[in-house]
Amino acid sequence: MAARGNVPAVSISVADVVTLLDERYPPETAESWDRVGLVLGRPEREVTTVLLTVDCVPETVAQAVAVGAQMIVSHHPLLLRGVSSVAPSTYKGRAVHDLIEAGIALYVAHTNADKADPGVSDALAGRLDLMGLRPLVPDGFSPTTGIGRVGRLPEPMSLAEFAAYCADRLPETVWGVRAAGDPERTVYTVAVSGGAGDAHLADAKAAGVDVYLTSDLRHHAAGEHLADDGPALVDAAHWATERPWLDYAATALRDALDLDTVVSDLVTDPWTLHAARSGLPR
Image 1 (cartoon, rainbow, N blue to C red):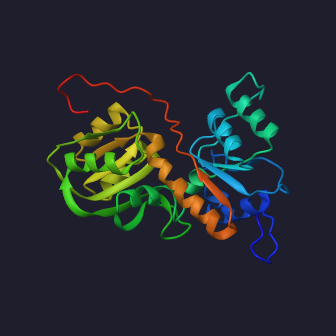
Image 2: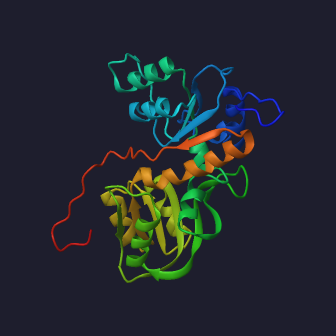
Image 3: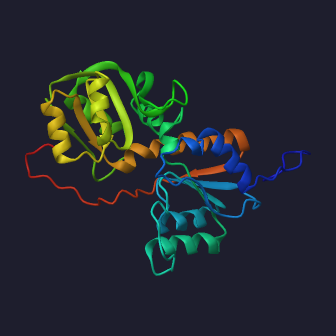
């Protein structure tokens, strides 16, 4: 890091970044199946620039190299499931080799970042200006942590207006935003859960909200939920619901360690085309 005036520069290491992130997103709060924390990188290596991404893929590794980052903080794990090879001929192996050869460390904060306060769903709620937040599914670590958030909009609006509001407030993707329910239904109280959230449809109904915003909703689960008088649904692209958290994590790194941070806006959502029949709402 550059010195300021006569004050000598303070070197920040990979281990220092890990310590800070582990404090904000305790690994012990992650789900048992998850794989979080430092994935690769020598703890003693100096860090001046960090790239924050939703996904660690070859494209975002190349971005890290381009911006001169020594470390990537990724939301999604690169090695969530067991692998028998990291040969560069494989997709994950290519990313691993690119990281090691460029001397870039990788840290993952996944379900532990989902549950944190502030975490992934706080950032998503913040994009919608939701007020009076509380966890959708408390986790027992503290009254303010857990999966998802419940809050209220600044003012009521119709479901159709809310869907358009979400499309305007969330990062843009080809997937966009779709909604299920009566377009004229008034919505005021909102549950949000960044990432795949159909496991918490029953929790959204129990919370008594008017609408539930999440990602990756399945056909049958959504249909049965609505038939059972559950709240209206808004389904946005997975990447778009988690991208806002990167800004929160970047601010934490800048404020605490005075690091240079770069937030990746490279859209890693896999869907690249969207088409609707002429005359239908898009």
